[in-house]
Length: 406
Image (cartoon, rainbow, N blue to C red):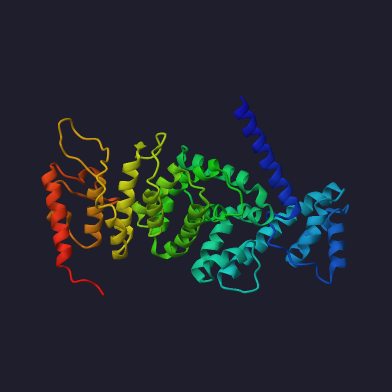
């Protein structure tokens, strides 16, 4: 009962925020230009919106729309007029004109015009630069999540609440009966808005984003040659910022890792090393995704595979520190099966992959590849200690045969 009441209260607060925002010009106005020198005649047109004759009122509307953006401040003020006719018409005209001005500004902005002042652009530009591709993504952000961007600039103290509500709606759309797709603009906006360390974002809001990361539409965009660059830049900024601030829960961090591993996102290597360095705590996914229960050693296993897939030869030395770690990884096996997997087995597979070697040639009896996670995790390991010892001896021998790098 208390939860239901809280949600109702949140809904009412959100509705009130939107109404006030519209009236104050926070939502819908592209930072309207100041009144022109013909403000007096503009005020006369506003007054004609309440004229007794219908034709005069209609003609005033047409003239106001013809004048365009300079009329926005007068219309905004007229939306609070005591005259109901003026108030009604001014509100409708304000919305129409704001929408028209916004579309025109977005079009000009995408064409690299320098005189278009869009909300939040300066901050976004400082982070990601200014190219046609970056502007195209930012236009998508504003088209799909204008209110979020404006609130980020004008009411940062409301962001946690607004983002929680929006993320919850995204989840409902994604997994509801209509399966509404998540746009690239929405994904970028949510990641961008939750990447500022000075803006308070709570755990429930961050955890909602895991549904965003697993959405097929988002992962497809990350693989699209045209959109991947700008969107990956936003993703990398989000990842770096939240790892640094410690916002990720254990579960969220694992979701981020597996997303990067599955989609080949290079910055996932940072998450992998953090998890290995901290010997990631056991988590339980609460039925989320395909992983179910994921213990510490299993998480470390995925982290090593992520470094193997996303890293390079510069990471061999780091992975080599685990070649002596005989910690056993708990994986489901058939009764009586003597096949086992140690952390050192996974570390060697990772090193072999980076080195361009085939684990089968080193005696891994069941090794098989996996398109998402590089290797099938249940195929990494050995049936006997003798097999394991021979594999490591062969690696050591191959290393000694390599000429030393100076």
